[in-house]
Length: 149
Image 1: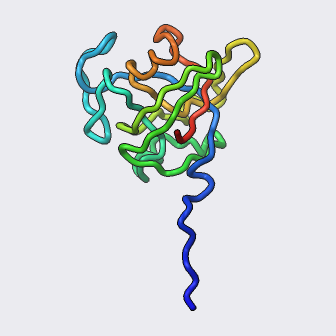
Image 2: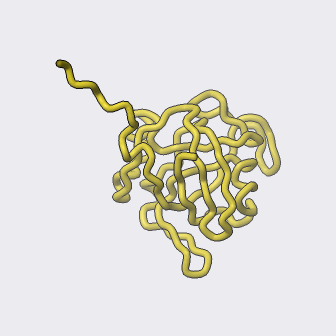
């Protein structure tokens, strides 16, 4: 009798990770952003609830290198939805992957805090529309938890 393969996704696909979250501009003009390219997925827009993820492809991972900071992130491709929760306020937003980034290896050890709550290593870039749902754009960085909704 043939053995069946498990149908559940691997545990790491569902594991939450803590790190810094920032914001970036893409696509059509919105708020503080002028028009720019539409990102690696071709769908990114600053006014949409979207984000950039450092491991969308081998090419992306070779640029962003979160592993250089000791962070192992699952491969997640265009359209995958993450929930980002601001650890300072508890506010959260669900967004879909629309680009590759941030370049995590440039920010190894970078740390943002609110009181005693801190997170290190820039792991996710939200569009301004998404970031403004969880924090003021003027904060620039927030400690956050990134999970699957």
